[in-house]
Image (cartoon, rainbow, N blue to C red; front, side):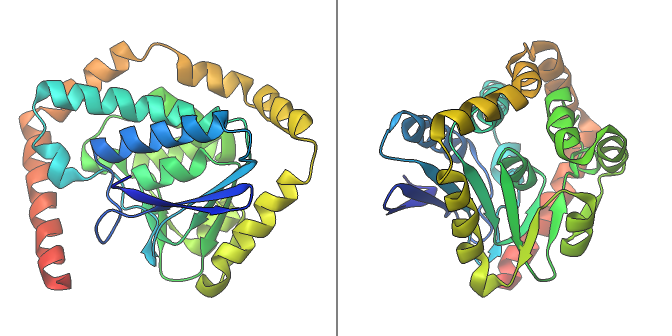
Length: 258
């Protein structure tokens, strides 16, 4: 895989996102990650999975620099596959723990909230969904995912203002479940996933799917109408102008970092 690395630790697999400095999500990552998760689900030797990033970044979200240059067909295919990835992750039958190694806004946050448990590294990091300020219409399946953990009131308010939370705020809100020192992050994630793996796998997975049945059903629903509205707004002149400004800012930060 070109966008992440996998490490096998007995019957546990660690997926480490590895794309550039910030693990920005492009179409290739979406397709590779979906394929990997499906393969791990069908592999009886795998009993649990940890999804993590690199120091400082879990994932900065959608790669706006690349996505901006997608043509209309490429944009539609990307968003179809990204929405489908959320369902693939959420319906994964086996224990899936996020070891959030740094910043995790927007698409990074979405990957994390598909998991069963989230451990986040302590530090000056942020996590949350800021799609609306970016100019992306929030589909109802993202609201359903967010509200599954936060409750509808908080999810609605946070989404409508594009709120990004500091690590302690995320713990207090219920967006993450645990804070760990960066040096102990993987140990904490391994401890949690192994606690799940000690339980009867059939009982655990069937219970997970039962408890997520309504959520999974919503994620599987036809998203065509929502997608059409998202794409219409994505190509609107005002959105494109705003994206150009953000991309210029991102490029200047990347140049400074290099």
